[in-house]
Image 1 (cartoon, rainbow, N blue to C red):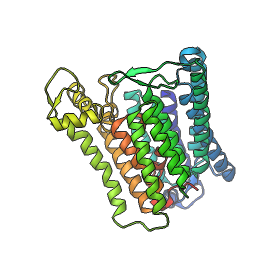
Image 2 (cartoon, rainbow, N blue to C red):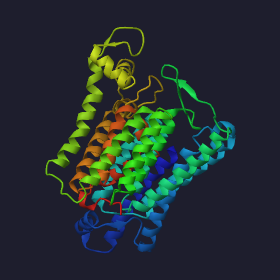
Image 3 (cartoon, one colour):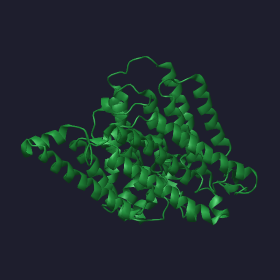
Image 4 (cartoon, rainbow, N blue to C red):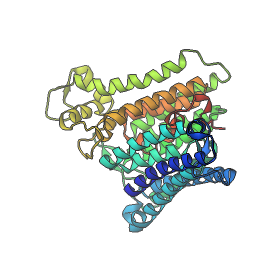
Length: 429
């Protein structure tokens, strides 16, 4: 994927050069050309077959989501242990198909102003730089998908995402209950048995289910029904009882409560203080993530042997998220453009981003997430805001928010990535 990442960056630069040459050839001088490019949305590499390219771009984006979803939900299940071709052939083919679809959509099926191209291109340059240092393929995958989502009505792609994910998971579950793929339970957390459901670890399964629940909730954004609230609540209870994936379960239950709120407040206007409050929650969560571990006092040899007592209880409730970050503070250096590390485990997306991707990306992610919450709240999109809040809570406890298959809400950041006004952000309709 290093070659793909380089090619996409060079292609975007070449497109900008082509735009300028083409604009100058039309006359009007350099100033007129730059003014038009900066303010007028246009396709890259010429305007031929514009409507056909835009329509094809939307199809390619949906196809890319389907390929990516199947490559993770099926190919990263324990089926890879049974059949070598799952990881050796199927997974690489689907990943390349997804990236090629996203790349084609970005280069040939999207209109940009130069202002948008500069904003998105600059962020992609930083993301690519960090990818080369961190070698985290999930990171470059979610970045490219967000870039490809520009100006795409999200309902149809989310339907494809949801359907392909459910179908792939149904196959894994069928293989699991048939005893073909990973039929055993794993013993963790003081001997408690937790179902893996064909995925090798309960939290992997929990994260994938949580991603599908978020996609379902987003698809119901225009009209939340009571049955939707009950269904999401039931899935949350299952995640708590079956795989005992606490983080996914709690966030799913919180999302169910959020959907109840959306149902009750349907048709009501949004208070003026609401957008700023929503955006401020990102800063609050980041502050808790980064500052609480600084209060840790080590009192014993084990990871979670910490004080003071109230912090130890909170750490236990959060399954050692605080003490793990404390350990990372003492064992890892912060690198400006990220690094590769496998230990210690950091199950907090804010701290993980700081060490894996570096402080620049960690800050940019916080700003973009806050901007997304502010923009969607300002437009009165309560379901989108609730889904972003659920992902924010999940990000405090897991690092799977950097996986597109767990985090479809990343697509809601697209407008902020391209520095668009919130009124232009895609609606799910």
